Length: 66
Image (cartoon, rainbow, N blue to C red; front, side, top):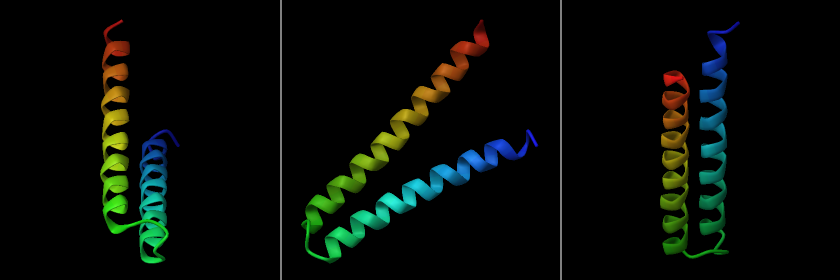
């Protein structure tokens, strides 16, 4: 059971990221937002996911030092 937990977390992250990207694409296709804004939102979303991933890795590293 313990080995499947990282897979569930990874799958959950992938599903939420894909869902938000899908929502951004839908908003751009339906002309609610401009394509430039959609691109900016996707870059910001990628930056958020990457940034929080680095913070989590740093937290786990520091916690392992104690």
